Each structure stands twice: as C-alpha cells, then as structure tokens.
Image (cartoon, rainbow, N blue to C red):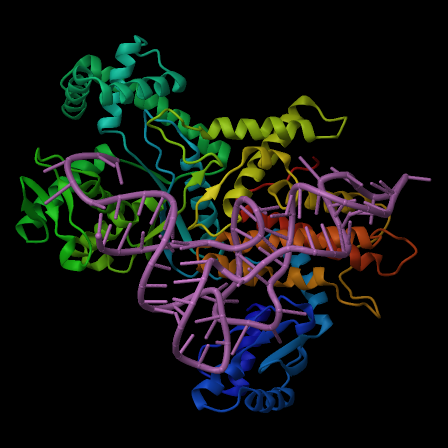
Length: 561
RNA sequence: GCGCUCGUAGCUCAACGGAUAGAGUACUUGUCUUCGGAACAAGGGGUUGGGGGUUCAAGUCCCUCCGAGCGCACCA
C-alpha cells in the first residue's frame, strides 16, 4: 500500500466516512504533506459549517494518530492539512534502494488481461509522425498497465488491402521499378498513384481495376508486385518498432479481417442488427443516438467498419478472455468508433464494457496540419534523424567513440521526441516545433536524462570515497527531493488507471528539477560531513526512480551524454 | 445544418470542483577556476474567449454567444 493509500484509509476509518473525498499532495509545501477536503464534502451533506466540522475532525484525528502522521491541522475554508513524520521519508529511501528499478511496481498480479492495439501503419504507405505519436502513446500506456500487475498483449493492425494499395501498385508500374522497390520508391509510387487518381480518369479506372485484382488474386504480375511491396513495407515497419523500442505479440491484417467481417455482417443482417439500404448494408446508428454507417458497400465489399467486426472476432480467437480491448487511434476517428462499438455490442453482447477506444490528438507543425494527399508528409524516420543530428552536436564528451556518440544521440533524440508527445494530456493536438525540440533546453526528455546521468556520475565518483547509508542522520531536515521520491508509486498508479502518461511526465520533470536544485545547493560527496552517506542514498534512490519512470515512458538513459 | 472536442501568460503546455491559477520558453538580471553549465537562483508578464447560472468554493459543472479543429453513406 502506498503512503497515500495508508493515509486515506486512516481518514476513512477514524472518521467513519464513506463518501468520496480527495486526499491530495498540496502544490504549496506550507500546506503540509497531504491535504484533504473531507470536512468540506461532509459539511455539505450534513448542512453544517465546514470549518466547525473540520475542527471536530482534527480533534478525532489527533487522538487516533498513526505512526506515519506527525501533525494534523485545520486551514483555510476547512481543509485538513497533514504532515508526515520524517522517518517515513528516510525509510522510503531505504525501500527504494532495496527495490531498485522495481520500486513502484505493483507486484500483485491483478489477473486482468489487456489487449492493446496501436500504431497500425499501412503497408505501401509511409510510417509518418502520426503513427509515431500513436506508437509512443500506445507503448507508454501498455507499460504503465503492465507495471500495475496486469498482463498486456500488444497488437498492431495493418491495412494491407484497399484502394491505397492499388494506388501504390499503379505507381510502381508507372515508375517502372518492378519488384526492385524499397521504402523510398514505395512512397513515391503511392504519392504518384494518389495524385493521378484524383486528376486522371484513365489512371483512376486502372487503379480501380488493380484494386479488384489485388482482392481476387487473378493477375500474376500484380500478385508479384503486391507480395514484394507488402513485405518491403512490413520489414521496414519492424525496424521502426525496434528503433522506437517496442515488440508486438500479434500483427493483424485487413486481408484477414475483411472476409470474416463480411461473413459476420451478413449473418447479423438476417438477425436484424444490420439493414439493407440503397444497395449497401448499414448499421442504423440513429437508433442509438449515433449516425448510420456503411458496413458492406453496394458491391458487397466490406468497409473499414465491417473489418473492425472481423478484427474483433480474430482478437477473440487469439486473446480471449481479456478484460479490456483498447484501440489507440487519433481522435478524427471518434465518431466512427462510437458507431462501431455499438454494433460490436450487438454482435458480441458479452463484450459490452470490455472495449475501449483511446483517442489522442494530432501531431501538427506550427505551419499547420500535414497532409499525405499533398505529399506534405513528415516521416518518423526523418524527424528522428533530424533530432539525432542536433543531439550529436550537443555532446561535449571529447573522448567518446563515434559508435558511442551515435548511440547516445539516438537515445537523446528519442527522449526529446517521446517527452514532447507524452508531456501533455493525450486528447489534445500537439504543435511540434522542430527547432524548439532541437534546442534541447528546459523541460525536455534530455533534461530528465541529463539529471539522471549527473546523479549516476556522482555515485560512480563516490564509490571509492564514501559509504552509502539510508540511515537518517541526526538533526536531518527532510528535503523536498525525498518527499517527491516517496510519491512515485501513487503517481504511476494514477497514470495507469487514467491511461494518462502526462501525470508521470510532470512528476519526473519536477523530480529532476528538484534534484538539480539539490545538486546545486549541497555538496553531496563530502568526507567531512556525516550526512554525506545519506545524501548519497537519496541520489541513488533518485537514479532508480528516474530510470524506472523514464522506462515507463519508453525513454532510456545513456551512461554519459 | 447536426454531432464531438477544444479556447488558460507573447509562444508551448499543467492544474484529481478547493487555499495566492503554475511550469518551460522568450525577455531582464545574477551564480560559475564545479561532485558534469544540456545546470542553478531571481524578476516582470493573467479579467482562464465574452455573458449568465449552480455551489460554502468554478479555469474545471450547466445555459448562451463568439472563435478553432475534427466527423457526418458506400476511403481507412
């Protein structure tokens, strides 16, 4: 149990309160280590003066104090501020140093299985910054949920059939590159095909024809181009996952979900879940306060919607039973998912409440939105490499080999990128200013890495000079750094429960900043000072918490930078 | 037109209905022959888009107006 939970339980038990109230870490340190609004909440229910009730509560609490608590007092309009005894924080330092990188993990397996689908790049198209953003969020949420004692199955889903594929193949044929394609030529081919589809009637007809042939496999040349192009894309995606630091348990494909989805929709058409309309098969979302969408088009081909039904069937076969199936996408798909989820509930009633659409904003440039249609696409690779070059110039270590320099700048670049994606609530759009990200100053991924690297350097240097001890020296004044370190498990818990990595980012930023102040203020290694051993224990705990916290964001820490 | 999301410092973002709305950046100034300056300390900068309401308490909830983004039948 975290300290936060302990204190909350104490409040509930000693005041015999059932209602929801908040126990928070006050922003202002003069308000104690915890503050609660319990008296104000209860005063409302019982229609009495909140300050009077708070006064009464403070009396009860003072008579029932637990070891952890050193002070209770009323403040302001009826808050109760609680201070924690200093030995709690020093024993927390000891606990952290014992647990190392596993501190904060919920080791009690909850028995829950989560299926998390994210990234979803489409073969024959670019792996662009939108996929990257989705990947970074999906991976961090996965790690947070996993950390809390749940089983996580990661899956990606690929649109390996459809008009975009036909456009790319048309482009391949007209560029004359044949099966000798790489990612770059595929990109050019798609862009050419997409452009011509819009502007040239003949090309459009040819592309539609290719699309049919991809589905029915009747043309050997096209089959061949399709097969090699698809594989080139998928191999490339593998490299990107590796570079971004994630592994998927499953890859699902629209070529698989399409026929399954079509079959299920036809079956439930007979049962009245779906309806025929204007030659197509639709789901009447209006019945549920949503809007109607097409599941099978008038040619009988499954749309994205029907494929989603087919995908769920595949997920059931491979991963059931799961407690929650999460799909991470950009918020432009919100309305689509509302309708699809409603239709899923009709088809699979047992999945009601077990499907969650986690939507995030779009990655935008200061100049506006990127568009694949105008060819204005920023690839993930391009942006990572740009950041990497910037990071390389910043490295001051003169003795670093070229190989290490390359590895370190890669790590720093990814940190800069992931930090700027995860630092804000996931629902909102991100305005990504490359120049600012390249400056690597202030609150940033590299800032967090740097603080950790410095702390590690201190520990290395101290090894020959001073012992480390978690025992609190006499007369020790508990520092804010120790107090922040103690909060780590509560922060992860909240981030995981709310699928909100930005709480963790905010926390780690504050923690790093507090460490940097501590570092500037105090001489840590000091053979003359008895407190030095304990200071080192704090530094060690800081390194552990930073390392595991950053890991949950998908960020790793170099040895030096 | 309908629906969803959003509007907080010059810029990029926080704030679990609570105390004096906070960070970074930019700007101004200081620390520095260091346990690693990708650092630290300090300063100015706000009618939380406008107006109404609910509440002991509203950036947060409700209504309304203004503005932005996304989505609304055979793309994904």
